[in-house]
Image (cartoon, rainbow, N blue to C red):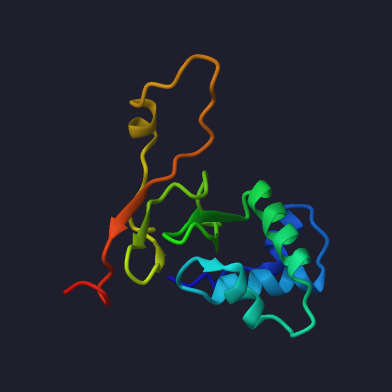
Length: 144
């Protein structure tokens, strides 16, 4: 599912972030992607002179603000996707990771319910902010 209906300007304004070319560019790339993307793939779609360190910092800021979520792929590389702009609590969906090709997909039609999260015994004093569920196996392209 692409997030092209998401307004880049609105996301940045809602997060009280300046509208820099790198921030706009990263969000535009992620909005056009159907799947979470690793930084090298994001950099390929940005102008040639874009500083990689700035992109990493931008993605970390976006993650802290809840604008994007990240998931670690089979190769231990973070992949990023825009969080559900219409969800009250963003990123409450599982991800599928292909063990052969490494593709990571958001399974947005599924939801990690609050009831399920509350059913997991967590020690007193801890506060769960969101749950992450990874399903590992073979994607449709890699399955025999």
